[in-house]
Amino acid sequence: MIPLVKHYATLKNLGAIPGIEIGPGDSGPVWAIVYICLRSGKVDEAAKYMSERVGNEEFAAVLAEYSNYEGSSGMLGLPVDIEAQLRLEYRRVLKTSNRDPFKK
Image 1 (cartoon, one colour):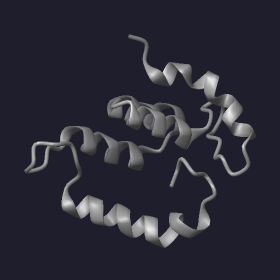
Image 2: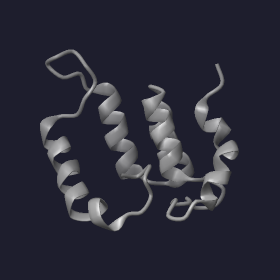
Image 3: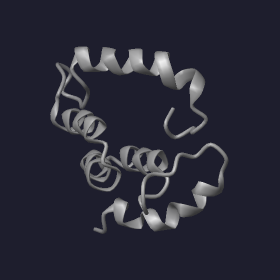
Image 4: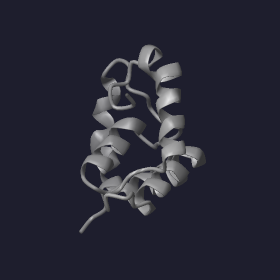
């Protein structure tokens, strides 16, 4: 199986859409790639991409925590404190200011 992140070059055309956030160097459309990885169940690849290609260690750590944490229901999730922090950040910044639909 070929990792999804290796195919980021095929997603470069998404950069032409207004509002899509392009990462540093040749990292491509950051949030589109993360979104596709997450929807495909490749949380570890999303964390690796954020860490190695984008350099966002903070969000890579959240993704790694998500892939390693198993809630009381036995499903993937985040600890309550981290989830609350992300929801607060979303309400504070992303909900009104970001045009990138994949980041939202």
